Image 1 (cartoon, rainbow, N blue to C red):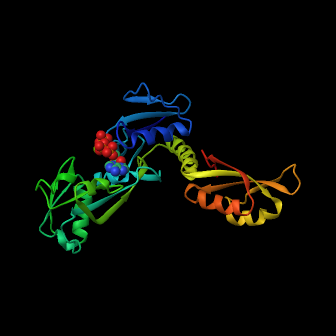
Image 2: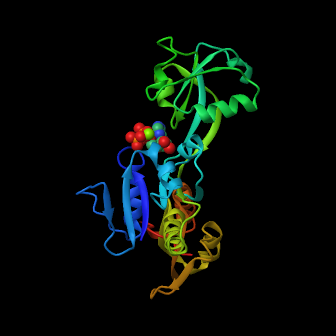
Length: 283
Ligand code: ATP
Ligand code: MG
């Protein structure tokens, strides 16, 4: 039995649970308890505050966990990062009031910076030879400059909307983060085997991320050109239609390229284009 710690509430909770459920864990999310079991896989889910996940995994109270890399870096507990999970993307950045002119890292010399990430910030300041006062606060960091508590902030940024709302400008990105799967360095051999199985299944979801499955009818004479437009993983599937001179072509494209590819395919005569969401890619 492997025990995984995930966030009980908050930004990573839903994506963590849906990742587990999409690889067949079938966790009961309606009757949430402190500890839940998967009915058909040797897995137990422990719901925690994200701050506590690195330590819980490091101590072995949980074998593995899903948490933002920013928390792993800040807490500094010994854990192994097993896999990047491609959700919860954000960065931890320094920001100052929009009205200020940024002159480089030395701008922060002798200034006060509000943050919930004092360790990551302390290291960046030391690496850059800057002397600042770190003002540690647990939340609402972004309002610190406007209420006169600090000159700048060091906080999580994703879209930048919160910074803009508080008249702040991002001046240094110190850490790029996303949700990661972490493990206890002394995990048992039996649980290592379960972990590898989980990682293999997670990878199929990660690889399918944002990809679309395309099916279309196309004049057989245009198939070679279509293959140049949508090369697929190995090669697209081409099948003859009962109608002479026509083929059916199947392929996979990334979501961001979809419309561009569809436009190109239509120009060379593709018809009846079907676009399906891709659930998993098993390599
Ligand atoms: P908890 O109650 O578990 O301590 P929290 O309030 O500390 O939760 P959340 O705001 O739920 O944390 O964020 C969890 C994680 O989501 C962050 O540590 C970060 O890795 C990631 N994240 C992604 N985008 C953002 C964002 N825009 N703001 C905050 N966190 C983000
Ligand atoms: Mg937290």
